[in-house]
Amino acid sequence: MWRVTLKAFAVLLLAWFFGNFVLGWFQQNNVKTQPEHKEQPSTATESPADQSCFCHLTGVLDDCFCDVESIDVFNNFKIYPRIKRLTEKDYFRYYRVNLKRPCPFWPDDAQCAIKDCHVEPCPESKIPVGIKSGNYNKYTQAANTMPDMTDCEQAKELGAINSTLSNQTKKAFADWARHDDAQDHFCELDDETSPDAEYVDLLLNPERFTGYKGPSAWRVWNSIYEENCFKPRSVYRPLNPLAPSRGDDDAGEGFYNWLEGLCLEKRVFYRLISGLHSSINLHLCAEYLLDEGWGRSVWGPNVQEFRQRFDTAETKGEGTRRLKNLYFLYLIELRALYKVAPYFERAFVNLYTGNVQEDSATKELLLQIFNEIRAFPMHFDEKSMFAGHKTEAKILKEEFRLHFKNISRIMDCVGCSKCRLWGKMQTQGLGTALKILFSEKEIQNLPEHSPSKGFQLTRPEIVALINGFARLSTSIHQLHNFRLLLKENR
Image 1 (cartoon, rainbow, N blue to C red):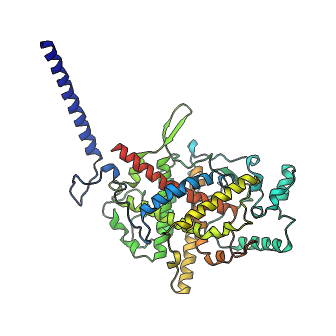
Image 2: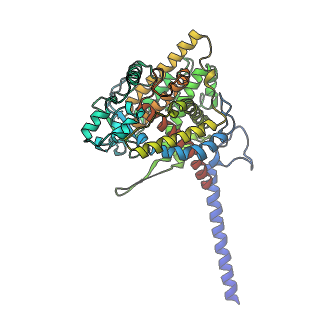
Image 3: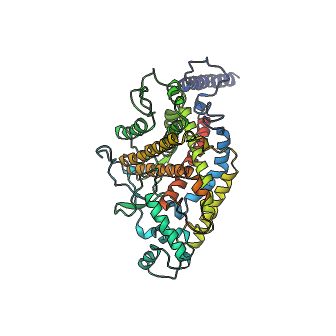
């Protein structure tokens, strides 16, 4: 009997020690992760610490009437699966870019030596012949029925205007080329004929955290924010959210009072750049180098890095604003796709790669996305922009364009090749979206059966537009994943 009693006592003693250990560990870790709330005392009904990144990310966005929740549902269930499949198609996966252009603003002395910064160009032999041919043939069906010939003969033939076209259509192509050369762009475009321009397979060079950071990366973003975001002279604190040596006096939401004093157009410009920065930061947090073993790197979401950049407590309340600017940028580019849909819906427009079945499936999928976008009920209304006095509106619009074009030039100062690739591509995508929004009348007057001289898109612009929006769609999808991870951590 006493042996049974002794065993029972031992079990109870062991359970008591184990319970106290677990309780103490939980309390200790709970204290470490509990954010500080100076405004209100902590209560049992407050959101958990690990959800503080999202507790204020809700409701209607500034400068438009769309709400975050509607965008989440629309993007994650209707757009993201389709846009992901579209960017895997040959037409959109190959991007021609010059990563060797020198920085035009300061000595290019900070090239990244980390192996993950390297971009592997795609050999010309692997590029679909229709993509190498240039821009004209994406509009011609005749190119799909050409007889078999050698690669050199085929490239030569595809590189010219198709000889079977009527004189009227040839003239339209020539007018288009002249207009495109003289057109005002929002981005500093790469010269595709440059020997330094190379095709890159975007699927084989994904956007990730490469380890590129420090003074070089800070200088790029600081130049973008300080010199191009219409910052008033009375504001001394750097706009770059990652800038060093920030004091408590001008930190937090109170800092942004100056922003409300700007006109809508300048406020929108700042929010676009902030949204682009937030999206890029999200990609780096979601594709972080977690482990580098014996020739095998493991990439995945880094929750701590995400909280450092977006958590309400760790950013003094600014993280929510950054994420809302991401949603705002999403709406801007979504609106551009809505506006440009008629351009692609014309029967003769063919996203040409040389593979008939692939090209047909690519365009069908693109039109499906346009149909989903058309059904979205809460589009941004850009008509309120540049709607004042004609002379002042024209000057402001030109200033808007030149500031953004300058930002595209700053992308040539990024020291990491992979970061430069994705920075240039996403900047060009946003620049193309702005070009579309400011070309509404030209798009409305497009001829049904021939190119127009009023509005055209080059293939690099089309690829950047779709991939740029896909990056934003991915960011919002990744936010949902981080929300689940933080909930699990809690």
